[in-house]
Image (cartoon, rainbow, N blue to C red; front, side, top):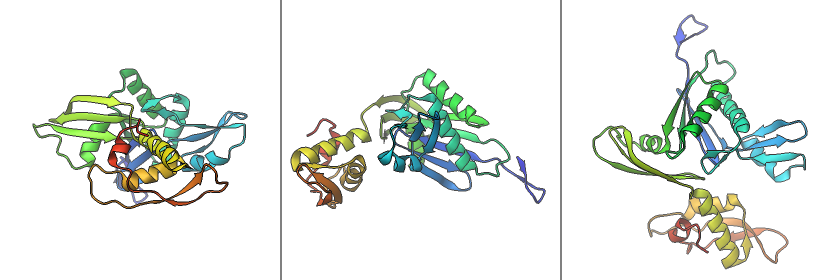
Length: 262
């Protein structure tokens, strides 16, 4: 508990972090989602310091000088740079707590169900080093089920499929726990690259990852109901300047679900 100016007490904040390969979300009790930013940093190799984190880093990524490097500390659900991961976590926690925080927060972090015990310990240690008072790791399928309103305490199975950017977690949940689970490194990023390849091969156009993700969000479906045709900015193989192109809705869910599709 923390003392307020009026002399009363207020509870310390709890923070939930969805640490994703591509994007991260931070939830704070009493406020809801307080941060939604890319899981990326810009590192200055000359000064050996981080220049930007999150959305600011993403915006800088397209016009970097030679002494700067873009680092995604999480790849396919695995931490590949622990030092950068720690600094990014500290930034997320400080943004969620604000400047007038009196007490270190309890932090819950969702993690892929297939990570090793060593990887779990590494995430816990990074969170403690980032200022957490207590750290709780929650398997992503359980977090997804709770977020979707599924009552995971009932004594029957719930099949959960959580598709992130770097990993897809599939689990059967019953009586508050995971009965069986699997994590595969085929997910949203593979869909984006499949769309980019399709547009290049079928329409001789080059699009970026942001445009591919926009297409995926607009037309991705597991059903055959009618879908819109998003406008995207693309660059033709023979064109010098980008132009607007209406992406055909004929690209079906089969294309999105098969990373090797052309």
